[in-house]
Amino acid sequence: MTPAEKGVQGEQIATVLLQKKGYAILARRYRTRWGEIDIIARKGMYLVFVEVKTRSPSAIAAPREWVDGTKQGRMIKTASLYCMEHPSDLQPRFDVVEVILTEGKPLARHIENAFDAGDAFGRT
Image (tube, rainbow, N blue to C red; front, top):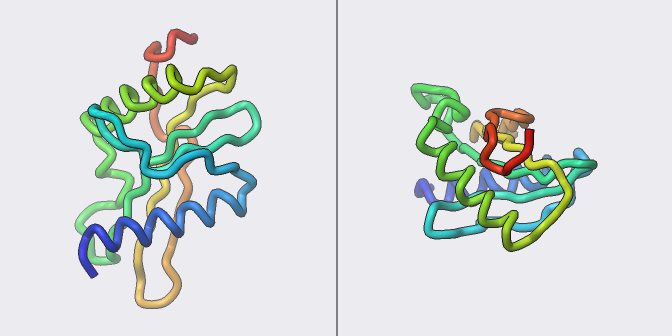
């Protein structure tokens, strides 16, 4: 399986997980010149921007560890553009879903509020 195929499979697993938890999926693979957000969802008072990281069990680091400062910055810029295009009173939040593709059933873990955007949205 290619890395792109793993990524698509991981995003599908994450989408199902989020839907089971009551999230409404608003967009998938939202792209701008700054980057891409894998899933944009809504739940309660939150507009949730989700990065999905998919790895094999033999990976040298946990999937969430690949969401470094550079990736976070790109996500924040991309999310800001989404919010300008889709004004909302919902509170932005950044989550990570890590997916580990095992031989049997894949393992998925949803990490809410994985990092903070600070003042990027003009809210405190």
